[in-house]
Length: 100
Image (tube, rainbow, N blue to C red):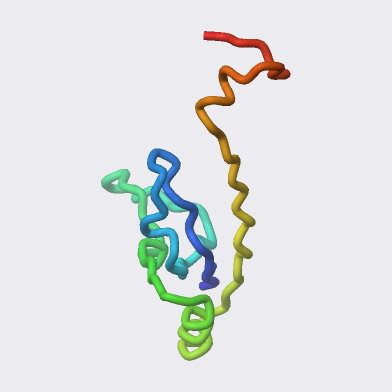
């Protein structure tokens, strides 16, 4: 079963970067889950529920190589920071209209 190594994005609901510094290895689902004919519950491979975290990308890749796990690495997207100041809302000569 293939795995994917990535660095998770920060939580969009908070400004902090907690739990986004570690690298994560998670297994990729190969097929669609199937419904159990008797109970109707969905069943599938339970290894997709496993998420392992590592301090660095190299540690995650070493773990995958040691355990013969096929993996792909998702590159980290660059972080764009928009610096804003509250006083820019009242700046003389602003290019956008004031709206409430």
